[in-house]
Length: 270
Ligand code: COA
Image (cartoon, rainbow, N blue to C red; front, side, top):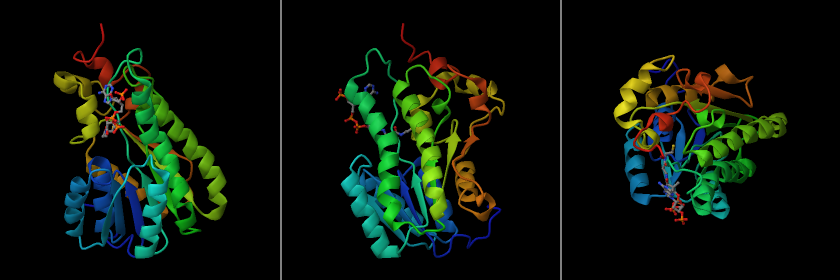
């Protein structure tokens, strides 16, 4: 149950990359439930169509667009289509991400570039392409970061570098775009149950043991992420910009090398 009024986002338009699954899909559903028109953009058309049908059950107007966030021209076209369909854009979420566990001494340059391309360049591309279509003043932009932005993690040099870059980008862009009335913030989730990210980075049989070591000894739910994403576009956060909320049960307090990958004996290199 949400603590916010059902119609909080009525008449507003939200554009969400990576919106066909995981945390981003949960945010899309929460925004749709609160009356927003929602655009979800992702690569796989079949997954997108299924997600759109699910979101339409809320009664909201939903558009799905198949594109790769590494393709700036495709994003420009997607924002133009969104503007034409729904008018000025109120909310943009740069949520698309890629990750896998790989040791840096063996990872190909292309593998590193793939994650930097989707996460960091994809975030820049999304916000840059949205700029001319944003409602100004009033637009709110969000990124989905991770504790790896501040905690070094073995097997994730690509994701650590990408998320650190994203958090830096948020701060610089918030300074530049604030005067026009555009706020930019983010969420840094730890482990979130039922997501591909958790599945990819999971500690496998060690998950239960790992959870017990966290300050809040469990993983989060997608709904908890969606509620925070709603708070960050609500009047509650009207005076907040350039900030990343650590919604991670305290994971980031534990410092470097304390990661799921570190505990994952299956993936540890000898
Ligand atoms: N270990 C090592 N290298 C890997 C890898 C792995 N598990 N998975 C992919 N790569 C490498 C590929 O081999 C390729 O490099 P190469 O050309 O030198 O062989 C490079 O990464 C790009 O791979 P490609 O299959 O073209 O992927 P992509 O460009 O479509 O990128 C990924 C997508 C690889 C990032 C993929 O993990 C993905 O799409 N993830 C999305 C979902 C996700 O991760 N969600 C959770 C986010 S926390």
